[in-house]
Image (cartoon, rainbow, N blue to C red; front, side, top):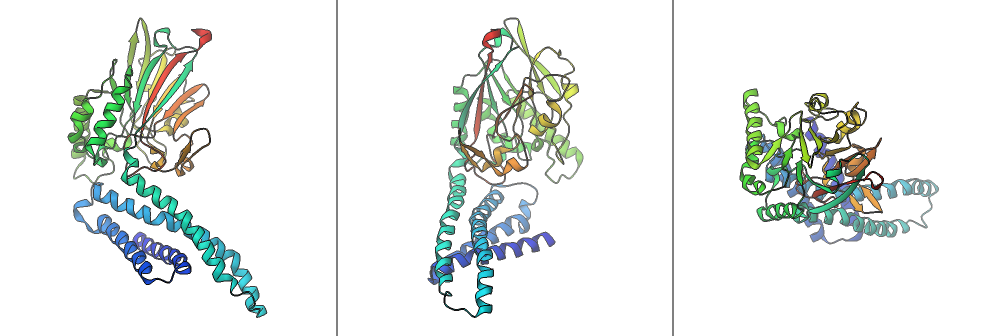
Length: 411
């Protein structure tokens, strides 16, 4: 309850402070009424969905996600206003105090004019995240992008020169609300005509049943050398209140069965070999391993126990912190690791060659795209679906296509 009291206090303070910007540029009561009505509706809907609706306490429903989404849409521009107006207040406070004690009234008229000017700038800047987050909920969440990479290796087996991998991650089927868009994305994946399809975890938000309406759709995925998968942190059902451990375990077994029905070969701390013209690649899959409070079911040593040190290795591991904390310093050399998990926070700014930024970078060093450390590569997929905030703004849903090439001097 204390958390809610703090939340209400902060929300009201932020609302009041942001409202000052509107007061400084207009005296129209209609604008005031619209501002406070929308703010109250957003807050009321959020409180109802998160606190008062008993049918929503156990799972993340569509209505709960949208309540969170609209709250973020409302808060983001107000935070911009708080920063800009707050800074302006800090600057003018000592000036005002000086003139007050000096009883110098000659420039008092300067403050309202400057306040109105700064408020207009602040509202203009605040409109950017407001519009971006709304667009992300309306269209951005299904704005699928195919990102293609070519990675070169000295010791790639000859037969795998030009081998194509399609990676998808973080499906989060429980969040979907547009079948036509998902069907389109499946077609887009198949159009890549890759040799193998690799899924790096988080098929559902919480419950295996979330995937049942989408089994036939994802069952259409195809790749010449097969479809392989690993589990992500959400697949274990750790974020749901279960009546018993047996019920939770049953949920996981049902999800495994669904993956098999779809055609995925689920790799659980084990490995498979991709073979071609007498050459082979070791495909290693670990269960989820994440830094901090995230589940640590992944066992890299066990997963690699049946492969040779000199095999060319591709590792599927849901959380990129596993690569940073354990994989790149392992006794075995993992040529390529495929991860997801971060979603790129579903919000950020990316202009290829210019800027790549998201708040998630403060949590994860490796959060989106290709990275190389100690001669080893990782691709952190930005995710196929979405979770929590029901949208994507600037960080779009991703289908990764990676072509393996043998270094020319070793070809």
